[in-house]
Amino acid sequence: MPISDDAINALPFGNDAFGDLAYCMQEWRNAGYEAVQALDDPDDSDSDIHWGIALIGNLAWAATVFFPPAFGTVATVSTATKAVSMLGSTLAAGISVKLAEVGGKLTTPKGKQFLDDYLESQVPDLLEEYTRGADEWVRNDLVSHMIAQYLTRFRPNIDQNNDAAFMGFYKSVAGGEERRRYVWENYVFPGSGTPFYNIPDGKGGTTSKGGRGGLKAALAKPLAGALKEFDQLWQKYKRELANYLNSQNPYAGAAYHMGERYIEQHPFNPVLSYKGVPDAFLRLQQSRQRKLSTLMNAKT
Image (cartoon, rainbow, N blue to C red; front, side, top):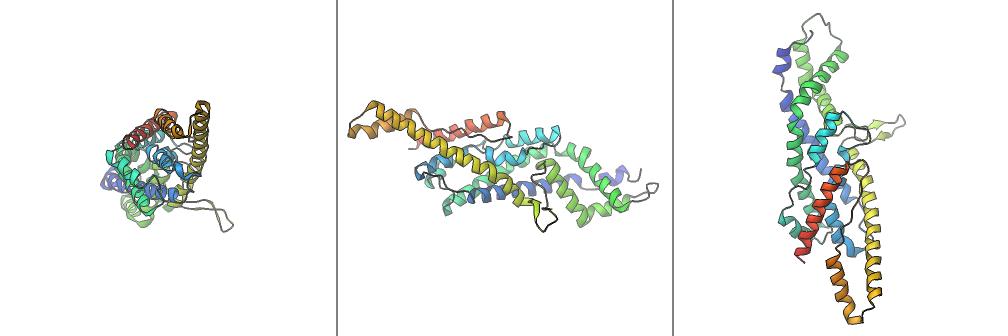
């Protein structure tokens, strides 16, 4: 064998992979923040707080990068499912207070800080879940990949011992670059939609954005779709409220109070769809959205 087990065991594969995972999670957090900031506000300013609840309480939009159209291995999909199921799992009472303080407006200075802090608070749970299954993936996949990369790049004599040369490649900048790229593309964000580097189109442009820009682009589409869907549901809700009031034909002084009672009895809880995200995860997120909505209503 061109590379011995002793050489492989002497290298810090696990430690380095953990650093790569932490890097991926931080780039996800940054991309999510930037994607929301680039989004338009809801059509109706009266719906801002509801949009904030839908966005923070239902983080399915932030999980879409983990579920690209082209899945990787079954093991990778399973890891992603377990990891992103943690998104929003802890809805502390302080979240509703802070969201109320910014009125659901996440593009104001205070809103930006709230969003940044909230996405940052999701990183530890995601990282913990990805770490749980990482050792097996490293042993069965990453190690083999790095050996294959060494053999392809250097074409060593396989009849000789290549321990020192392989260890040198692994510890080099090129080796570290290849390891991090592989963790990004094959374990955390599998699929051609979120590459580690930009993919050139041969004409001076790119066919796919890489890195954080790629994650942001991957989040932008479902976010835009969610906002459009939200606006439609909000307008439908307002029409239903208006129809109810018209059917009751209240006198002027009672209309407001009847509207308040209707809203209390029939709260606006939009159900947003995200293509490619598992139904079980969507249902879980929607239940957390309703929980946050309940917390918000209790404080009004």
